[in-house]
Image 1 (tube, rainbow, N blue to C red):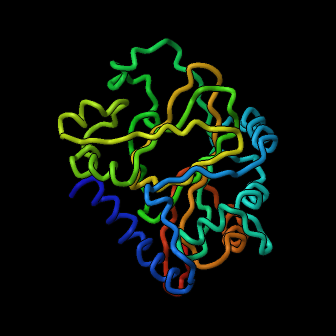
Image 2: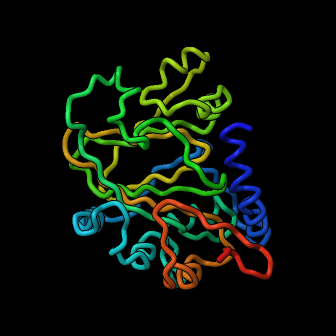
Image 3: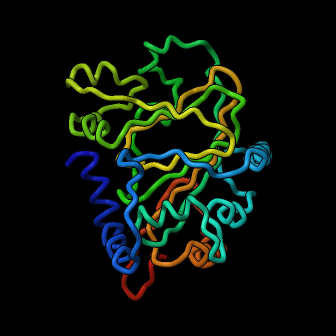
Amino acid sequence: MTVEQRRIQCWDVDGGYAAAREKYRAEFVRANFDLQEQGFEEVDVFLRADARSLSAKLDETNYLVAAKINKRRLFAEVFGQFGRLTQITAKLHRHFQSEFAPVFCSMLKMGPLQYKPDYHRLAASAEVDESYRWHVDNGPSSHLKLIIYLNDDHDGATAVMSRQDSRKFIDAGYLEGERLFHVDEFAEEHGISYTPYKIQPKAGSGLIFEPTNVLHKGMYPTFGERRVFQIGIIPWGEPWEKHYEEHWAKGYSSSNGFPKYVLGDGGPFDA
């Protein structure tokens, strides 16, 4: 069983996410929206001043987990509430063809490497964080990730491939080996043609993408500090506010993980 097959078995089958998505889609009718058929799309999220205000809180929270951030207020800014839909919510509704829920969030920052690296030899360097090598995420196939860029006083970025190009690498066995900083040699060895996209952020902009299907990586800045807030989003049967009150407001918290569904009498999440 491959890495991808194990992930699908763990989350889509055993974790119940595939069945849950079909259940929720059957109860929710909207026109389809497929992230520009590429598996990712750039979006506007915050006003620039709002993004910078949130960015400033990174220094107050030890920057990794957003423990001290008012997550309800933040989710309301991103998704809207009380019937007011943001463009993000409209896109999520059309993509999932169901309601949705945020199930994890975290704040991250990354400055330049402590030395000027030879980027052509950096693939095997332990200095490079795993999220800055080409990878797909673990988790259910149906989930999306929203990266919100909090500042733009740096030259860091996010690199992403289309769903179609990512599939070429996955089918060639890329996931079975170590994550690579550069994939040119792998592509040449396997006869893969591909076009990486560089998302150069502006404060308040965002990127929605399919992290289990789309190869992606962060790109180190050479100056300044890259600051982002990321949210994991899954299909859900009710508006996000109700999910928040039933779970986040009662102490549920995750920086990068998923609960397992229980679709019977026990409710949507296991205990």
